[in-house]
Length: 113
Image 1 (cartoon, rainbow, N blue to C red):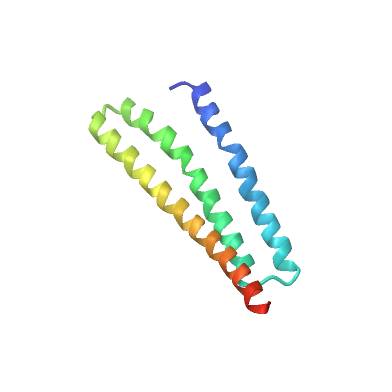
Image 2: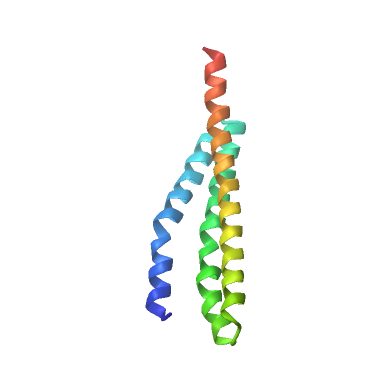
């Protein structure tokens, strides 16, 4: 895998990173305007999703490096799958925080009505 392929994979994650940065900024603005628990969970969920997106970097760099170190393809596949599972777990934690933030926000609005 050459430099161009690495760059392509990294650039493909830029829109998602920009979106989650915008979510965090939106959450901070809402928190400064008197937000509460929902806004904190929105910021936490956005931050966790950024971390999950940044796991792309070691996942695309590790497999070719391990291949160059003469590891077996079974070992490389196991490591790559473990990194993918870890990334998915972190991503799911971010989604859970985001869903909880919206649930808290709309549940409070429903209780006030």
